[in-house]
Image 1 (cartoon, rainbow, N blue to C red):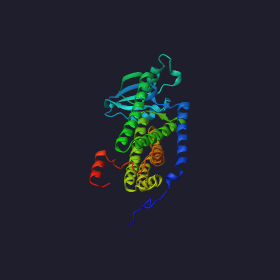
Image 2 (image 1 turned 90 degrees about the horizontal axis):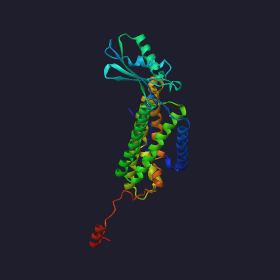
Image 3 (image 1 turned 60 degrees about the horizontal axis):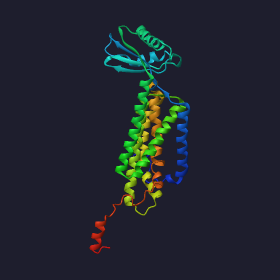
Image 4 (image 1 turned 90 degrees about the vertical axis):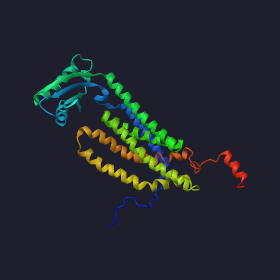
Length: 325
């Protein structure tokens, strides 16, 4: 039985032939994404915008009914709640976003928490209230700052690793590709006003990891071919390297999409933002590895001598003494 090959072994696609227009489009998309972010802003969830937190214990049950609670609280009109276990299996923390009209009104936030508690007590017996507190905007701001620092630290650490592992040009190329992927993801959330929460930070970190993995595979093949084909023009060598890794790239992306697309259309609403971010990240991460990370090496001055060990002065003198010059 013959195996089905989505990508033939002898592909010879001239990816870098259109590197200039593709780069121009990518730069425009990055600028447009940040323009939308600064114009529309991000639709921060409870984690980043503050809200009301209610802590409850379901004393009559061994485990809190989190899926049912998420649906029930979501029907109260305060957006998608953030519900997590808090301590034992029958203890939960429920956070809802405060509406704009409740800000600055004494007692409004507590009243919203009481509505959440009353709704749950009407549906479940033996529910104990453990807390009804307001999550301040200051705390939410600290969450935003910490999340931003985590993203920046991840991108810089990755670039530093690639710099040490390959050459500094490769580190710059990987950093630009990652910046492209993160920018387009943020632009999508700002454009469609999808809720931006800690889940999305996790999704962006996953996108960075996937894009990096794909980029390193391409870079490793480029490095091997630079040593093997010393006289080949760099654009042709980059095309060769991308084509040689194309089958792996396509199969990896399709495998992930087979799991993500059903979850995107038929999964729970609470996971829609996370799934949408990673799905977009698969596309832009694959694209950036081919059209961002590889072509930039030409403009950064990578040549066929980049990975050839440089002869020291002592080695040159020794070779000259042996009459090999």
